[in-house]
Length: 102
Image (cartoon, rainbow, N blue to C red; front, side, top):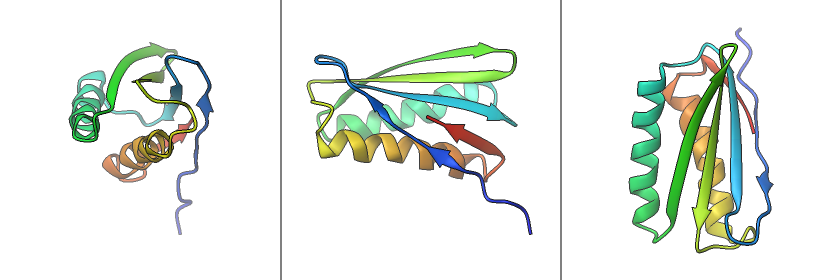
């Protein structure tokens, strides 16, 4: 039986821009595919009046996705839910081929 991917996440506090950083390694999708997933996520966040800005970096085959949340505090339940949703979304969309560290 194959091992299930592990997902860890944390929010880095910032007074104006709480951030959730996702470090993605292993079998990663293309940057274009990652952008499409993140665009879908930002549309979902917009429905809850949460503005999300993101950037994608890559070094030695490891993708770093930084999400910035506007107009909310780091303790806002919606932000924690959204950050967890990102992790679950990335793992599910790659059908477990990706390990996500946040």
